[in-house]
Length: 579
Image 1: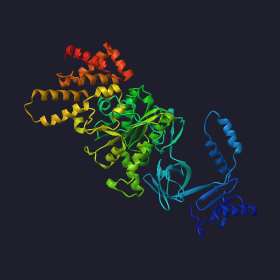
Image 2: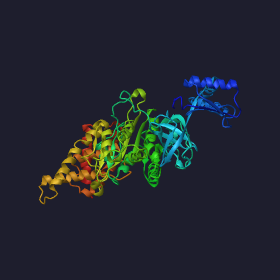
Image 3: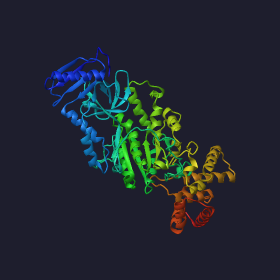
Image 4: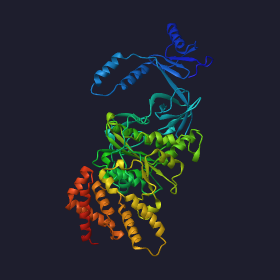
């Protein structure tokens, strides 16, 4: 609001002309409030029935009956909801008195493509929700000297040049609560699955500070994905941020969905955020999760490709806010952002419409902060504040395997490791197509059970030796027996890592398979028969030696006696197994 003495004027609206005494009190109020004598003009109007309305520059004081009721409504809304709500309401009503509050009203200067430029709201801070005429909501996204840029969350057809805008004094938030489990909602928390209204337990701001170092504890509890190649070599812990990266159609979403399905019965809330995807793809994912019994503990937040860029922009933050509700209650949460490449594109579109200077690849300079402030909210909280966690699996799409592009390098530097999916592996039938050389988990063995850590042993080294030897020998026509044996062993390991979609493996399945394979028990079995042999072996263990399976799952420990027992049973089974 400008306080220039030559510009500031005041207009008093009422149905009847104010008396001299009333006019004098208004003039005294203006003098005390603004520190100067301000010309006061009375205008007859029925806009403020039962009282007066005073406009001073961009400030509006509503002393009408409706204005006082609105103040009381806001006071009642601020009362915390709990079992003692009735006494609190009575106390609020008895102690409430009308206040002299200024309401700022702005004007739309320009509007289009989900962006509105507003003048007259000089004091609106970044992130505040604005209410446009017609009920459309927006959020302050760009602050300039004489105007602000605002992104619109609803259809902008009712927002036209010259229409009014009001401040709400609130930052953007989404409804949260247990009732959202099993539902598909949009970026604003509105259900879009046709299953009726959701009654929220409360609201959380979509943007909130990440937990401090003091509020965190080390990542040392496994979050098992059920995917052999990941749990054995690139383990993920509760509170970790692990990037899933690869070209289009290489199985990135499949890994995320398998990880969600594997959380069944493990008391872990899952949130899947679909950014810029086709609605049909989101429907298919919801049906898949429901088919495998995973939808009961999952929330899907969808900002489809047909939604406006502002909705795609806030989608991951809204999903994170829903996850923080559970984390603050001591629960474990797995959240998938699919994918942040499209999120960055949506933010680039917003930024260019807001006239921000483009930089590398036309992205604005703060695009790194866009994702860092999102992913830093994933953490494992200390036991003092509940011990809950959010594990984040961001997905990023590369072009022709270029991990050195702007967005991939940004997110690689933010996360605690990446699972790189390679197109050539995918098309050769190696699925999931995890590249062992480029994938890494910076948490490592700390996020594995002792059994898994011991069982995995030399797997990564053996696979690396196999890949290297394979390259050098692909043109050789005559191989010695040791080299041929090494190649057969490596090929068997690669085939062992192949896994069908939506079929996550339990801990005992992975441990038994690893112990047996690294002991060269599969040596001599044709590569095409490896998966059948492993499947039959696991069935044999579960039916004839179930005590071994239960021991591994319950204790998470693999001692030498158990290892020897597994190898003895596997060797005996190998002799009798005929294909």
